Length: 293
Image (cartoon, rainbow, N blue to C red):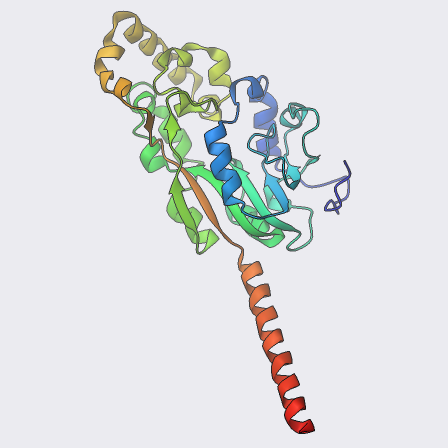
């Protein structure tokens, strides 16, 4: 399908760091990172009545709605190659340099990607420049650093994540007025990011599962290996089951994931300008009518 929204040339600047990371760790990504339908429904609802949607940092295409005209942006060749047949068109570009005209899209979505951007401020400004509203999925490290695997087995993950994951305060400051809601992680969650297996600890012993999560890939591999070995020992001895017995009574947890939504200031300004223009035209017509009387 040729998307009429594509106005970019074939050569678009990309964030080489992000692309390189996922060209390395993205092999087999889509077999582990399968979109969870409960999150998909919430994200789709957040896009509202948008007819044209841009997915920034789209990866292999998870959480993309199929009932809108959608265009994706993804810098990693490996991730673009894993997009399913028939999925939306995908441009090789980065969030910091979106090759589209101002306010080209009704909405933009960015799911678990802002922590990979080389320039958060520039990326968010671009997102708001090209789309009237936004839906961003991110995570709060103030919450996630207390996850049992991070806290008790590989605390180095939290340090590595804090160096790249923007705080909620920083993110919302840059976005301006927005709404933030919690996204729960259920015990049978299908999107295999790090905290998804909170009640399925044996999953962390699988190298393929760990490889599909950037938190593992970007943390010291010796620290990860030590933590995984300790976890394996605790599972074999029953120590893990005793220590975390309360998890079996829970259906979901708050792992820090948040959906952030709002309206672009460009869209607000355009709407305000349209109202003012309409008011002036109405006033002019009234003046003409009075003059004619």
